Amino acid sequence: MKKFFEEFKSFATRGNVLDMAIGIILGAAFGKIVSSLVNDVIMPPIGLLLGGVNFTDIKIILKEATQSQAAVTINIGNFIQVFVDFLIIAFSIFILVKSINIFRKKQETEVKPSEPSKTETLLEEIRDLLKKN
Image 1 (cartoon, rainbow, N blue to C red):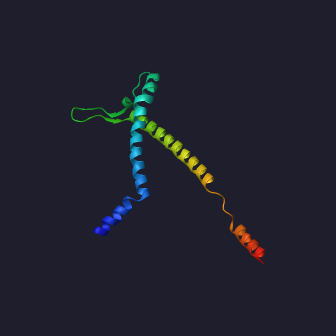
Image 2: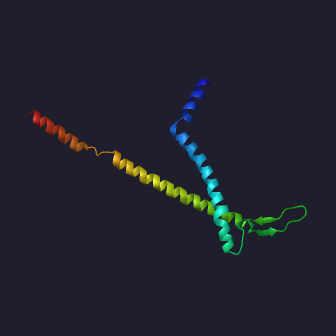
Image 3: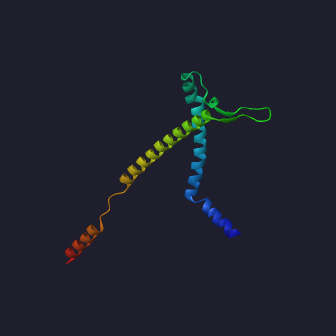
């Protein structure tokens, strides 16, 4: 049992797992921010421009409500808002990943001095041996 917990501790404290957990938590929070941006900032002016339409109210009624059953509807407006959420999140993540990749490329080119190739190394060794003789 002790070995099991040691393996779990090793797994849980590995860098990739922690990075992934942090990414998931931040992604969930970011999703809430984007949802609020879409619902509270972007969609109201668009609805106003379209004549005061609230997108969440746009529905296709398949079956009217009765006393015993709720109405059966296709909620087009809700889908539109979720789709706009997705587009904004996808675009934001694209920009973030693109920025990180640019930053990494700059770091790799700045940090890595060019190492001599194997051929150059061999030629230097031959040159040094010839100098000794």
